[in-house]
Image (tube, rainbow, N blue to C red; front, side, top):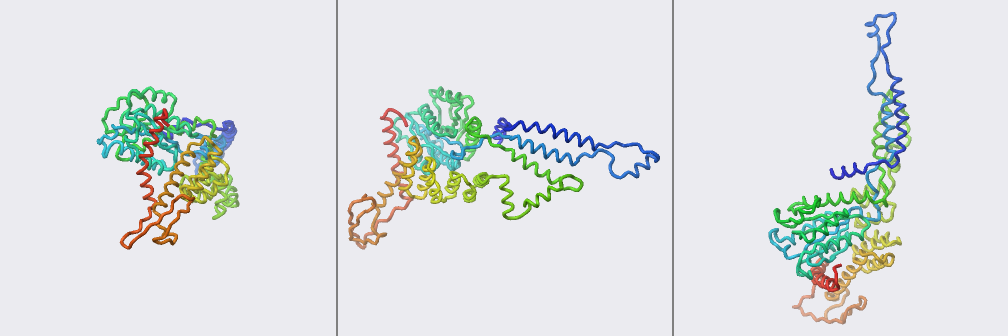
Length: 512
């Protein structure tokens, strides 16, 4: 919290500073009104001073607070609001609202040490999963490295993709042994460069080799935020990390203290990067001062104070009216998209979907509310690669795999260089392939009314072959696989898939 305040103070400035010139006539008005209300103890004539004091009604001294003070204070606040104070940028609604992060996990033999039960690697995996859950809605990529570095998953908001692949990472799937963090850093930087939103790189390791120091110092010179989560017991040697001046090194803990430190460091780097992005508009915060001026209006309703007509105006405009009138007042101060953003940040996604006018934001609110068909229908009406990609995500969540594949293909047609769409397209095709094969292998014909001793033909895209099965009373019909069983089978085969892919990448002459 303190880091956010300091960042805001450092970036504080005015968008329309010429409005500050209005403070000069306001100060003159206040001085003239104050000077005119000054009272003096004029000498009395023809009456004794003690009798004159007894006959005088009211206080003859200067009043401490006058009506003009409230008027001027209100005018000053409104002038400052018109000057446009700001300390942050307006995020692009088409981009992620939190910093993307590339997680580089060391998958080496040393990470199998059991000094962090069950071992360092498993503890690191658990912590990464906790981090992904904590960063719900933010994009996270995963890189595995030992002697070589390989991209396991690109930047994605789907934790299920990361979970299935992360659990399959072991030293056995890596082509070469070692701890080449430099290769992982290069690959992570390339992955982060694909995102239009500034982000951070998190290394989860037990120790950094001194041979990698020069690469990390070069990245620090470019002000790319690199964080380190040490998956080793406290007191373990980490001399190389200690030689990185200014590096954010977090010790893995049993609670979420380490995750809070990582979130704080990543958020600070994200705010700093946004402030330096000249493509984004500044977020005008003058409305906050306007709200502060409103309580001063209440002073004007007091007897003897000025501008009591403001109460009549307020009643006429519906400030105190219930129902729709109150909604009209809210519309004076906030646009529908701003009201939708307030609801979205309060995790009232259904309400936000009804408020947003921007179609991408409305679709995102529907998606976060779990209304996947509605979100997909909205995205399908937009002809942008981002909308097609979002449609694919919504249809995948709704288990509409073929329409999702078509949406990802459309996104790639509109933007050929779209790595996230390429990855999701490959994953969705693999899921569809596996689901169809699993259904064919477990199909007994019971759902279609086909009984035992009958010939069954698979008619799903002419995929299957003719099958015939005889059952006796002692035999039990094979059970259908549930979705959870399918996913377990996918996880079981994922290690072989990663091993094969990493070997192909390594033999091709480089990591990807």
